Image 1 (spheres, helix red, strand yellow):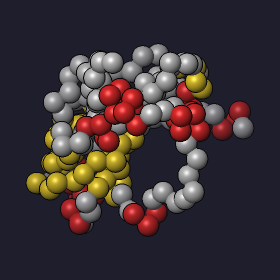
Image 2 (cartoon, rainbow, N blue to C red; image 1 turned 180 degrees about the vertical axis):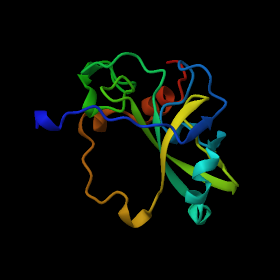
Image 3 (tube, rainbow, N blue to C red; image 1 turned 90 degrees about the vertical axis):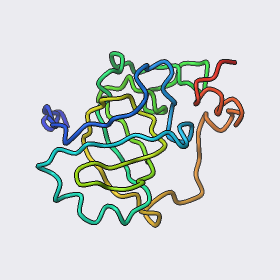
Image 4 (cartoon, rainbow, N blue to C red; image 1 turned 135 degrees about the vertical axis):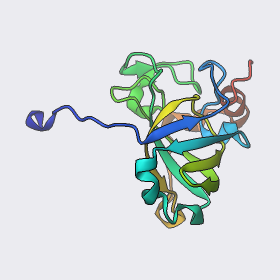
Length: 164
């Protein structure tokens, strides 16, 4: 495996614009950003690749977590008070700071995608867009590990960054 561990480089294909400028108040996960709108500005060189995307209600957005803290293998996730392995969380302090969100696609205007339920910071570099396809989505039964013990009210309050 070590011989395959070479550096990988990506270049952004656009930028994500949102009303969130402060990491401390940005909602955590699209579920806790319901109704908050933003837009994705895709570089003109990739406009042809947006063809047919407007037929989907949701899109998967992959982005670079450019303002995350240095990577750590143990983190305290927002839904818990105990350290957990970073790969058992969605914490941004990862070895490869890649974010993933499923957002609602409201409409497309040329290279601009108007989206809702945004949980990323303004000016976040966009890496990729994929359609969310229900038939490829979650299949049950699903296990949620340590998160199963988190009360829904607590998750809602912490996800929206409301104080206890």
